[in-house]
Image (cartoon, rainbow, N blue to C red; front, side, top):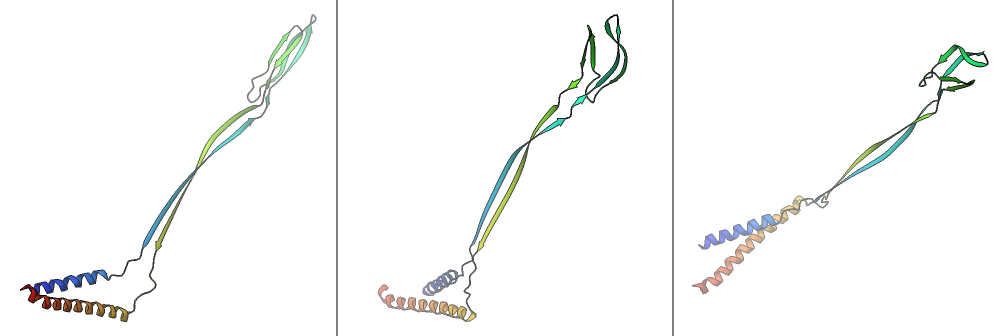
Length: 165
């Protein structure tokens, strides 16, 4: 029973010493920043359409004191205009043939999307590395500590053994 207690105590101390003396791992910090910028711009423009006109040439004749159209020499329509409208009433000539300048207004929106992703990774590196001899000394110290604890427990057991009986 005592041997089992000694072995289990030594095993427990050995496990505690081995797992507690591990070197720490480097710390890794990761920061992610994502910025999305949307710029919306309103564009507009004016399309101008040039002036347009049409022409009309005719011969006029006077008959019994009244003016009449004798012969149409030329009737030329424009790009968007029809041939001019000609009226002759009571010696009065009326011709309609002009087109004002036209404007066309257009507007549109454009979107520009900028996606900026910034990733920062910080890794801490350890500069002070132990040499082989320092590692040997640490392990010898652990073994010596386990032996001392075992001997101390054995001494305590021998001192208190007569009291328990």
